[in-house]
Length: 182
Image (cartoon, rainbow, N blue to C red):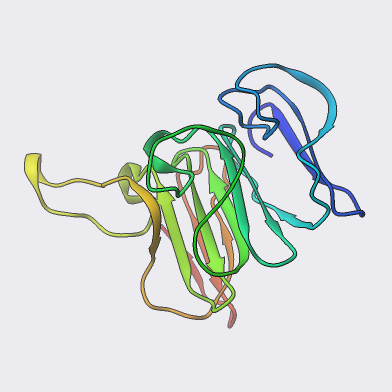
């Protein structure tokens, strides 16, 4: 994962993390403490895939398609419609998710729901959330979002990647192979 932390899902469906912890980003219900060896996150045994990319936010999708996140919530990157830090997993409200990614530059998350729609939330530096520019005071703004917002109307998203180190470029690929960058 991003920064100086790591996550893994074992074949038994348990979730593990280790490394540098800031604001609960390892999911162990602790706000700070370096963990030098793998430690299980909670007791659930139904974790399926990781949300990768950020050094301040952790996340994973369970086998039932629910998306869970934890860590630093500046800019609303945890999708809870607030800016509260969470040091253990909290569920993103809504339907089921197919894939998700997080980027360091946004401190937020991008997710593809099982219906093929694409969503984003968190910091919106330079419009990296893909939600467009909003005219307003001081000539306009790239407004942060603290809950999931749909990007466009497409229903054929296949893969999302908010990587590239700082997460300043997001890449989406549709199921028919079209590539979109923003």
